[in-house]
Image (cartoon, rainbow, N blue to C red):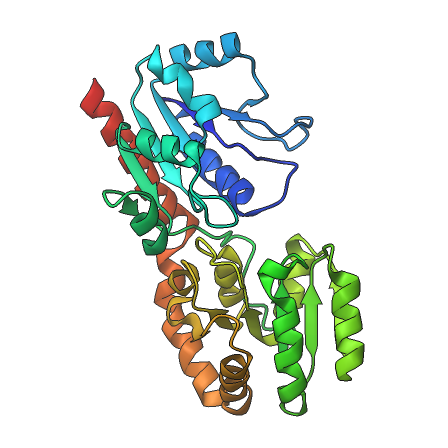
Length: 336
């Protein structure tokens, strides 16, 4: 089967969609399919991918790719690479990975056009119940995979009763909320570590100083270095203000042996599942309460880790990718 795979952002960009695109495309190839991946991200092809990466194709090349394909799969809806379907009829599957609306919540003409397109393709996948409800009620919900070959428990690393944050230092991600909450619980914890970078790092350092909170900033970490760092902590906190469409970072933390405390917005509760506790978004008092529960109760942390085993198994890359491939194959067969 020849799969034209589109991903608006891709390597060398770093983010949830970029990672999931690579996981899915590699899996499709491993199962004997031919993949060509189209992206708008500039760059070279130094990633060593087992499929060609076509960057910013022109209209003629894009039509040619649709003519080549048996099926089109969009890893998040993108009108800019979907339009050739008006002229070249191919089975089309779209995965919706984020909100179809502007950052301020408004629905503009492009968002209405995207929702119109979803009603006219062969299958739609949503990464969480929250995304399904907003984008397309008929979508099949399949949560994200995580890199199970990378994120794992490393028993040789001592795990402290400490708290970690992993993400961009921007207001939406809520690291400032965590610093304020930590000021209330620091006596019960071995420390707070912020992993990442972003435009608000100076403001976060200033806030920690003003509150008298000692915070360790690691900068951005990747691959083994990131897994090792997560394994040093008992708790990973995902205090997002913005309603996350899903939240891969929660799965990565759980797989690394952390118990997660996440906000209740969007699809983040789907990602956390039984692997942690949920607090009311932007409610620092509730965040303090959940952190205190976990910091003071090792048995609770142990029970949560045990209950998370099945949750993680359901998000193994092979299991999730097989569900995607099954839907793509079925769509292709129905059009043949």
